Structure formats: structure tokens, C-alpha cells
Image (cartoon, rainbow, N blue to C red):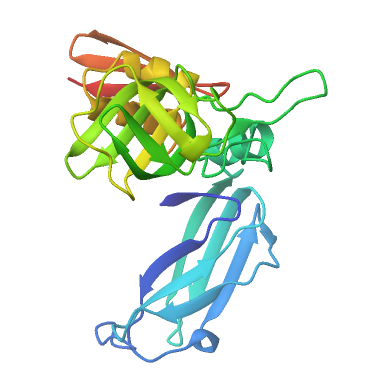
Length: 273
């Protein structure tokens, strides 16, 4: 049987070890009790392979980490000269979309670029003529210090009007409510709304300000949970939807093809329906 692995991925192959009768498990053996051979493309590899016992079961694991792609062959001989071997087809490490995007396209929040308490990522500046694209999804995560039904006091410190026209979510013991920000005043970090809240914000409530893209996403959702889930997905925090930009599907003859564009990649998934 040929296994599959990636460069830098730990490979573990399990095998049994019996006494000379071929029935009684040999337990308590250590790495030096075994003879090991590791080849890559029919050439002896300098990579170290080790053998360890699984508990005290007489079953052992030979483990190694391939340092290059190719066809690897692992062989181990037991003290009673039984030989176990397997092949591993090793390819280049997989493209980690989130890591690649985070290191090559996205940058973490840079100093003075976001309001205090901000969360999320922004596109890195490419050159002096391209301004940073920021506050697209979650512009700020703040803390309420009190308020009334028509507004909430927070620890925000931006200039007057900085958040005007965006969407604000207040998370209170009475529920989560989203409101359009009619105006923002720097004094006491006060947000005022077009429509009153159904409760008075309490000190310590979470206050989330959605950026322009976050607001657009939310406008297409029927309820707050769906809004937050979609924003979560767009931030790349949902492992089932890593930074998914667009998604569409086609269905016929009991199959559904789902097309997802992630960065510069197109992923097609086939599902039973």
C-alpha cells in the first residue's frame, strides 16, 4: 500500500512485532532494537526514522518527516528478523490559503491605522500610491460605559462623525441589536441611532462597529445571527469558508457542484443531494 504525505509532514506507520513463534507480542522494545532503512527515490536518505511502542501492546510505530518530495520507502526489521515496509508518495506542502493570504496579501492591524480596540485584518499597502484598504468588515470592537435607548456611551476616541452612517451592534443581556449610526460624538464616545434600542445599554456591553463591507453583507441577511455568521465567514474565521469571496452552485442528476473563489483559487466541490 502506498501512503500519501507532504514535505514536512510527520509520517507514522504502525506495525506489529511478534516473538519467534509468530503469535506472542514482543513488548518493551526500544528504538535501538530495530534496524531501519529509509529511501527517497531509491537513494538512502539522511532523514532520521525512529521506532516507538504504542503503550505496551507489542505494536510499534516507525516515524519520520520527509524533507523532500518523491517516492519514499520505509523498512524496519524486528529483533526476530521480521521485516515490515511501506511506501509513501510525498508531494510539495499544500498551499495554506489563510497563511498565504495573511503573509502575502493581508497584513495584521498596523499601528495608528485603526481605532483602539479594532479587530480583523486589512490589505497591506502595495506602494505609496495605493492607500491601505481598511475598516472593511469590523471597524471596531468597543466596550459600553452606559447610555440610553437612543444612544450608547463607549470607550471610542475617534473624532466627531468618524463612524457616521455605519452599523453598530450592541450585545446586551436582553439580546443583540443592530442599529444604523446616525451620529457619533467624541465626547464620551457617544453613538446615536436612527431608531431607539429596545433596552438601555449597560456598562460592559460589547459594542461592535461594522465597516462598509460588513454593513453591505448584513443588509442581505434576515436576522442578526445570519449577519454575524456571514461576517465571521468573510473574515476567514470559519474553517468551512476560509476567506470565501464568492460562492455559487449548480445542481443536476442528484449532484451539486459548489464553486468557491478563495483568493486567486477556484475550488469545486461535488456533493450528493
